[in-house]
Image (cartoon, rainbow, N blue to C red; front, side, top):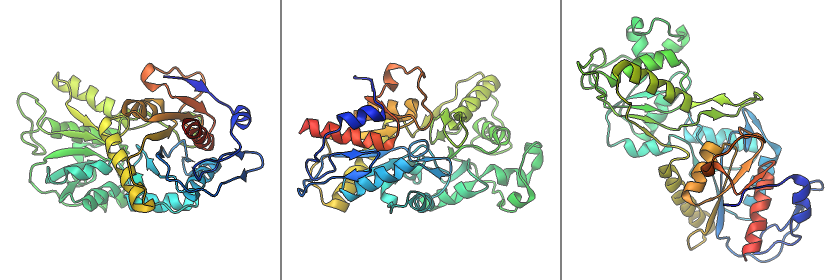
Amino acid sequence: MIYMTIHTTHLRRCLPTVFKSGFLAATKVASRRLLTTETDVAPNFAFAFDIDGVLVRGAKPLAEGKKALKLLQEHKVPWVLLTNGGGKSEVDRVADLSEKLDIEISTKQFIQSHTPFRRLVDNYSKVLVVGGDVDTCRHVAEDYGFKHCTMSLDVIAAQRSIWPFHRFSPDELRHARSLSEDPFDAILVFNDSRDWGCDTQVIVDLLTSEGGKLGTKNSKLEQTLPIYFSNNDLLWANEYHLPRFGQGAFRTCIEKVFKDYTGRDLQATIIGKPYLFTYEYAHGVLNEWRQETFGYDGKLKRVYMVGDNPASDITGGNGYGWYSILVRTGVFKDGDKLDAAAKPKIVVDNVLEAVMHAIQNEIKLK
């Protein structure tokens, strides 16, 4: 695998001056001047973009992200957003991103960490939904089709001594629902926990219960329920200048507590980037979107994965055979050590440079 670094000045020198196959051939970042040709040939490549640290930084959109997406949209190059973020419905996230990035995004172009949980609806009836603000993730789970969704919020409202150090406010507790005595079938971590202590206690209680009945404990402290984590990101990027702990850190805590308490290793299913299931799902979505929206026939030859997190975006893209491009606007910083699986094809300053590099590469391959 080739590992290169490219900066803006070098990019300006090496970009070609003519677009081929109906796409933008070059752009001078300083002048923002775009040149196009008259031909219109369907591209056999597409893009998958991470969001946090690539297109936005916390609540703020990155200017290069807006330019990159508009460029691809204008020239009918297919792309999807593939994020380990979540906590809201796909409809809400797309509406928010469309406004921030000033571009119309379809829910069919948006894959967040827990989107594949839809496939579990027929497997489980009553689930513990973990993470997100108040009970937002409960509503997401219900939109997916889960029939009986309970949260730690409901558990604490019913018996606060289960975790007396909880941080739920009176306003939040008003969102609690009554608990049924039906046993739980599974635990689904949709998003980052807002109260690690409370969620850890409730999760471990259920994992070691008798057949999923809250308030019981099996004599062997065996794991009696499956648990799913929607992503494994140890770090993610927001407005703060250093990366912050993500759901992967919470998973590590659950595993450690479970091991210390039971003497057993936790058996968990993890999806999201960099796991193969998520990339298979995304590749299928890209092909469907490409056909449905632009009428392009034939399968994609290349997908460019543009991300800021080597451990998730780049490792996953490499593992699935995509062309990985790492940007400097998020988690990754120059000097960070990268293992073999997390080394990208190229490192660039931002997402617009990533798109221009990909176009240059496609021209070379013609």
